Amino acid sequence: MTSALSRHEAEIPFDQVPGRWAEVAERVDQHERLRLVRGGSAPALVVMTADDFDQAVEDAADLALCREALARIDADPRPPLVSGTAEFEAFLQRFAHRA
Image (cartoon, rainbow, N blue to C red):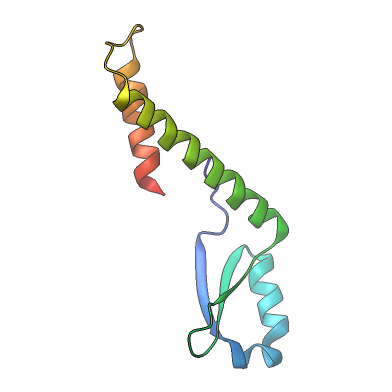
């Protein structure tokens, strides 16, 4: 499920990065996700560790499964067959809205 890593984000203007690579590496090693902001309409670049990236992909997959489960529960007109379904649905709702 969702990791506590990569919760901190910061922005650095792209033109300041060449003189700040040591800082960028140190901050990323501390699990800070950095957005390197470029000028014009160019999208920002995101820098993070490989482990944080893998965790972010896993978190996105978990969130997609959660939303799919909620959609299936909502679309099923039949009454629940097991007790605890409402509690499970409430858990999924909290998780889906946390992201």
